[in-house]
Each structure stands twice: as structure tokens, then as C-alpha cells.
Amino acid sequence: MLDNKSISSEELTKETFKLAEDLKELNCFVTMNEDASIEKARSIDSANDKHSTLAGIPLAQKDLFCTEGLRTTCSSKILSNFIPPYTATAVERLEHAGSITIGKTNMDEFAMGSSNETSYFGNVHNPWKKGYVPGGSSGGSAAAVAAGIVPAATGTDTGGSIRQPAAHCGITGIKPTYGRVSRWGMIAFASSLDQAGPLARSAEDCAILLNEMSGHDAKDTTSLDVETTDLLKSINQPIEGLKIGIVKEFNLGDLDSGVQSCFENSKKLYETLGAEFVEISLPNISASVPAYYSIAPAECSSNLSRFDGVRFGYRAENTDDLNDLYIKSRSEGFGDEVKRRILIGTYALSAGYYDAYYKKAQQVRRLIKNDFELAFKSIDLLMTPTSPGTAFAFGSKGAQNPVELYLEDLFTISSNLAGLPAISIPHGQVNALPVGLQLIGNFLKEDQILNAAHIFQQNSEFHLDKPSMEDF
Amino acid sequence: MDQETVRTICYLARLEIDKDKAQKIENDLETIIELIGGLQAFNTENIEPLYSPLEQTAFKHEDIENSDNQKKKFLNNSASSNEDYFLVPRVVE
Image (tube, rainbow over all chains, first blue to last red; front, side, top):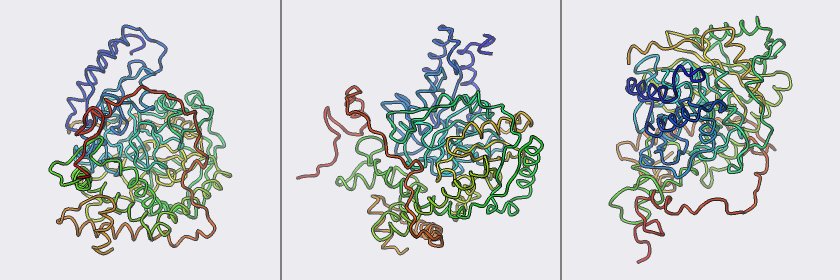
């Protein structure tokens, strides 16, 4: 519509803000960027730009990406007044391609959570059911896309934070290979696990966005300097003979029967399209959750030590001395889940426990990576459910025992530990709530998982299902 | 995990726990440590730790000045600063 001028970029942008206002109750945005967005839309209209891939497309950015001059909070009280002096590379590249950053999306505080219930700015509702979680941590981004406010949004994924909310909101989301997208300007949670990626309505849209976000960045020392593939050109290839692995150790028979039947149906669809299924053993996969909950908190306790109330962010008042300023600013500024993870990480890294917890977890991480390397010698990709169940009601999981919520990430965590790309696509519903299917690829094989996801979507209609929004 | 250990970790992390939440935090930490303790069941003899999935040396670039001095912008983000410094409570009497 933008191309044939049946709508101008300015009209589209204004419509986007109107819809976001009408659906304010979803609580998927922390900060809107209205004036600057309309100004950019006008300049796109007057430039008549037909070459930039995303010219005039409104996008939402997870509130973890620094945006110059636009408040960036990580959904935390401690950053509730932070205005970054620079823009994250991933966002800068999307904006360079012509997209318009309409606002910053709500998330779990510092991306620590799987339900978006740890945000200082309140819970995000799942567009499919009011009072239900959208998943996390990129819950605001997933809800904004599912509700149709924006066609796509950015997210970050440390243990499933793109894929799990994509699954719970019935959209598509990809976590690229570690190093594929620059982390510069992303507020770090766990540096060896964090990776940015897009959430959108389809694998094809994800390919368009990922094409723009990817690429070497000299400002990020972990950015890969490899030749980039045009992901849009590599989708729509036949999948005859594609070998898909099913992980024996995941005991899918223990899952909810509705989730199981979605999985079986998708397996059949892939078989009719010519794919072959192979049972694969990943003997150390059960160590993923404990390894992750040692490594991620350890890295978080180190990364979040920068929030001390001195140089930026919230500073407590009435403090006795410098140490008291640190303690009060951090204690008043961080929420309970963030404190819990900092404390676990501090414990795992402290003298006497480092070898038993942190080093041990990193050794186990290698065992998990080795298992994947061996598996990918005989298969092209792995298929698992994205999440053990569907979205759940606010407060119904993890309140008494945090580990209950940590197990939500059972299927997603291992690809972060090994640095592998993985995508979640919608593949059915249980009790009128979406269910996600995960495809994990080998190192730098985003093209292969996007192609398999695209072919699935060309032969099914789950990605076209939309929530009625009648509760909002 | 006893109260003394929790107090030590809190001090190391420069965090204070509300009294009414202390017991819950202690229980939560205990549960999480128990989860992580499950790692001991895996044989990691002679296995090198994997600290990053990339396992490559971070690339280096020439040490060339490549951005403007943004001192004012950075100082403005502090709750308390003057023209040159971030201000904190007096450290030396």
C-alpha cells in the first residue's frame, strides 16, 4: 500500500499511534515516539524513497535497545529516567533501511523473566486473552505485533525471550546465531547468551528484518565477520529430503495432549512436504536449565554492577556515604527477580563456589554444544515444541517457586548455550491459545530454518490467525 | 543456605533485602541452588569450560579516536554532576 501510494507513510504512522492508543490497556509500550515518527514519515513521503527496504514501515523496539534521545528503561525503575546518548547498531540499521521507531516496548525487567510479569511498568496482557501472560521477556514486542499495532518488532533472546513470547502470542520470532547481530547498544543481561532478532507475522517478514539487522559491527567484539546471505533469496526452496531431528530426551509424551497433537500434525505436514524425521540423542540436554541458571545469573551479577546510582539512572536520596548510595540506589531501583538473579550470580562467582557452580556449568555447556555438533552431522535441523504449554494466567506460575517458571524455557535454553539459531512459528491452538513450534539450526544456518518455516507457512494458515481483541 | 551466607552475598552485591521478604528470598535462593546442584551429576573430567559459543579471539582494531567528545551528554545523565565530574557523597574528610 505504501508502494502504490494508496496510503502515505504519514497516514500509516498516525494510524499506528491511534491503534496503540485504542489498545493502551494491553500495556505493551513503555514510551511512545510520536512527534519524531511523524516527522520521519513526512520526510519519507517527500523523498519518494522507493529503494529502502523498510521505507515508512512502523516498527517497535524492545526497551532494551539504546535509542539516542528516546528514553530506554529496560522496564526497570533504576533506568526509568535514562536517555541514551547513542543508538544500538541493530536499531540504527533498521532505521537506516527506512523504518520508523514508533516506541519502546514493555519487557521483563532487564529481560529476566518468561512471562513479562517482572516489569516495573506492569504486566503486558496477551492479545489472545486478557489477564494472561504474553510470554517474556520480549512480551511487549510480541503483543504489539500480535495485536496488529506494528507489522514487526525487535526482541532479544538470552534463554528463549524472542521465541517463547512469539509462541504464546501466535507470531513468528527468530533468535539468530550468536554474533550474527551486533549487541552494541543492547543493555547487557548475560553477554555470552544475549542475541537480538525480529518478531513478525511470518518467516518471510523475519527474513526481511534480519537481513537489515545482521552484519559485522566493529563496535561489538563478539560480532561475526562472515559473509552475509540474502535470507529472502534463500527461502522458498524445496525441502524434499530435509532431515529433521526429534530429540529423544525431551519426552514429548509428558506434555499437554493438545501441545502433543499440534506437534504430531506439524510432523505429518513436513513429511508430506518431503522431509524425513530422525530420532536424535542429546545426552546432556537435561543439564541445560541448571547450566543456564548458573551462567546467566553469574554474567548478570557482573553486568548489572554498573548500575550504582552514580553515572546514570536512579539515585537514592538521603544516603550516608558512597557505599550507602550504592546499596540504597540498587536496592530501591531493582525489582525482586533481578535481585534474586544478582544474588545467585554473586554466590556462584564467590570464592569457594566458583568451581562447583560457574566453572562446572561452563564445562557442561561444552558437553551440550558437543552433543549438538554430533547431531548436526546426521541431520539438517531439530524440531521441538517452543514451550511446554500455552500462555497462562497472571500470577499462576512461579510465585511460590521461581524454578517453576524457569522450566518454561526447557526447550529454548540449549540453543543459547550453544549459540545456535532457532525460530518459533505458530502451529495450532489449545483452548483458543496459540502454540509454537521451534526449529533449531546449525551454526549460521538461519537460511535453512527460515526456509523450513516459510515452506510450512506456505502450506498452512496458522500464522494468519489473529486474536479478536474484543476484550480490549 | 543460612542467613549469614545470604547477608554476605547481599553485601558483595551491594543489595539490601526488605525484612519481610528475607525468608522468601532465602527459600528461593535455596531452591535455585538445589537446581544448579544438579550439574554435579554430569561427568566433566578433562572438559574445557566453554565461556563463549564463538570460541574465537575478539578482533582488535586500531586505537584511533573515532567519536566526538560527548562529556556533557554523559554528565547530564547523572543525578548529580558539575561541569567536569559526577558528584557523590564525600569520600575523604
